[in-house]
Image (cartoon, rainbow, N blue to C red; front, side):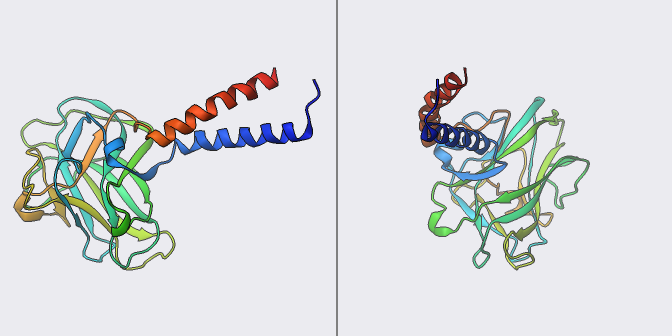
Length: 244
């Protein structure tokens, strides 16, 4: 059967659209609504921004500072996604970059955080996010390859997830950085097996936690993504039938 020229162009457009939709599912980092995207049963959760009152915590304008959250793991699991709530510090525009590393630590609640062997290191891009659009927004970080996180909960042993080397994609070297939301005085200590640290020092004597979840599952698509997938599925079937 001979195709009309417009039909061929239309099918080519659909093929590109389908490829783009599939690629969007593999984004390393993006911002979404936490009610939809925060995992229901993560293997590790220090503070859930849907439940606990959280407030921004920054690196005091120093992009070379560090923010860390310690935690324990009570069973081996394959890490596929990481979640946290964040925003750009005031005056720090554009998408943000940061190094994300998970370290083994011998003590999850020390007076001075000492890092051990790194088990995961990723360079992460955080989309620009300011006060006027941070309502119900988080970062979901999907790993290209699952990383096995081994059990570490003997005594005070565990891990630390650290963010450091904050910078701007559009304006490298600009002062400022990423503000990672943490619990405040109203929430107090929401996690008993770790604490939030800034530049190796515990925040409020170890009585604060950064919003963080580690999960073996991939993010659950939000309704708009599911709707797009549902709309594109018949089109994909049409493309396959046309090729037969």
